[in-house]
Length: 390
Image (cartoon, rainbow, N blue to C red; front, top):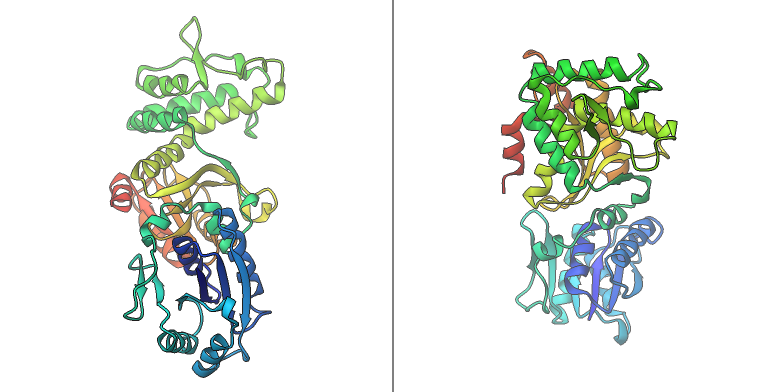
């Protein structure tokens, strides 16, 4: 099979169609070889990541704004061994579409376009398309890496990991425990006072300092024990659990203590949201606690969750806050949008998930900030559920 497709700035429709047909040869029809060199290169890399390595040829049209006749003539001039057997009309200008459609009709070649909104490969003639998988089937095989590559985004610049089952279970258990808001807040403050210095670094002896567990905070403590991050000593006090054979490593001890406090304080909500996202079946290649070390100016900490949304076929960048009491909300929201666009492309989604309001009058400002930055705000479990509904 020889697939010809029109090349524009958006490569996702070309990627979807090629993966659906898996042709032996692909012809890139472009109006400007220099301008579209990067999209073509990104598309070929994304196809290779997806296991498809056809023979590629470029067909450069005679002008930057080709007429339908120029498109028709250029396709007709192709040698017999490069004559397309199917034509994807998605990607170029409207005039390129018309020229390609005319050529396909004159030469009895099936043609189609990719309708991502309708999730369909739509024929543009009465001729039957060759055997082709559905767009939904193809979308189910996409990965975040292949989509980012198609957009020209270096996915190796994002460093995170897939949450383990025990981490996800901790998120669920902690979410239930944090319904006792005041008790958990008071206990986590006790942990901070006992284990951390004012600058946030761990005290030297924090790893062996036990802290009493009030009854109302016991479910939260038990969730951390089950996750393997802490233990209950012989006196019934809460103590950080160090990795095996690393008790003599001060840097490791400090990092474990700080991570434990962070996860009890707010990291649990990130894992709770990640668990909900994974359970929905809608998201793929989900990574937690994602950093971009090469761009510290964009990081502003880290992105809590990065994933591929298989409904919208776009990268998703999620920031999670256990309450609205976090500092500099305006800067945080615009930074989230900046990171999403830089690392995920123009069509990347940015979502801010907030578990609960700290003060009722904060909601309006947050929604206004998110609207201005093109960030979706999800506030509370009902909005999460509506977002994740099939």
